Length: 211
Image 1: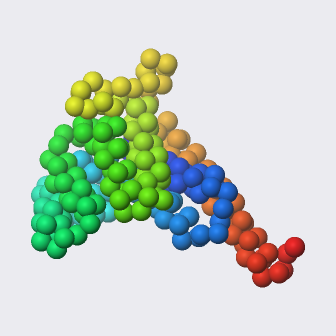
Image 2 (image 1 turned 180 degrees about the vertical axis):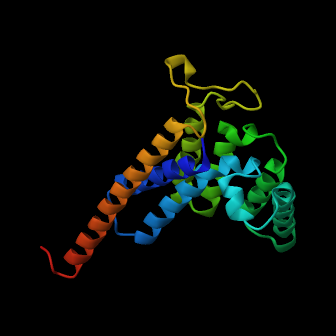
Image 3 (image 1 turned 30 degrees about the horizontal axis):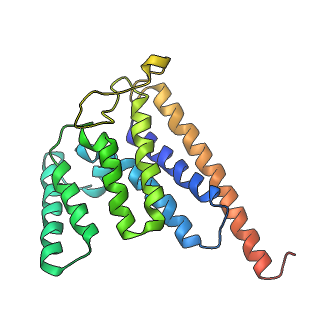
């Protein structure tokens, strides 16, 4: 699927998590949940130089240098971990960046192993955000499984799985891809409106304006 569709799906996933929590007491954590799920939904495509996440990370860098830049960032993070005694998640993030910089598209980053690795890394940063990272990342894999190419869920076994067996086989960048992205965007907007309404209501109750 296109990056825009993945982002919309990840955003909807994050908003859905925030809504399902049933609590708007911690607006900051709610926002971080949405952001984490959205970013995680783009992360599997970090193996593609022209992907949305690489355009965000390296907007002014020529595509042919982006893999080198990603690998370099990873190596720097690894070195800093050992030289500055930084937290373990810095090492894990560095290994991930350096390790996937030159891998083929839709290989290791599109696997359950990568999902677990990223979730663990985020858990070490903030346990409260691990679920958002997991569902955001998985949303990308499941969305790509709707396409003809499929994804290698069980990498290093390179067999790619899709939903063609039940008649679902969409084309990346096609009309169905765009439709799914648009629907996800609409659901995100509805969720945002609901959350804002709940926040306003909670503030009004706290201020004594409502019973």
